Amino acid sequence: MIESILQTFLFLATFDTILISVSIANYAISASYLGRETRLTRRRMEKRKQELDVRIKELQKKGLSIKDLEVETKKAKDDMNTLKNRLFFLSWIGAVLVPSLFFVVSLVISVLGINSDILFTDLGIA
Image (tube, rainbow, N blue to C red; front, side, top):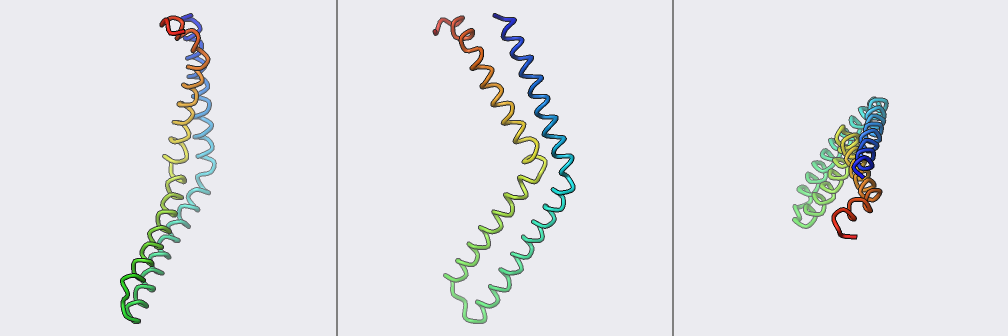
């Protein structure tokens, strides 16, 4: 029984190492693309800020309406949040660490599922 659990954890460690190395290799290969896309996303954010400034100036010339100002700022905030989310998934954390965490969680759950009969019969649950 203990040997079976140890073999399963050895499988888990080997498989997790393989998946993490593949994830890091993919990130390294796509770093140039990610850099370009990050730069473009930051430009889009700056452009959106400039568009908001222009729109606010137009509203001030027409006579500042608080409701129009709130609508414009809400749209700008939504656009900025969308662009920030894109930047997160292009970062090292979003491209490597988050998938690695999901790999570990899925493997732990599968190991528990594989060894559930051994674990629960020794505890007297099943």
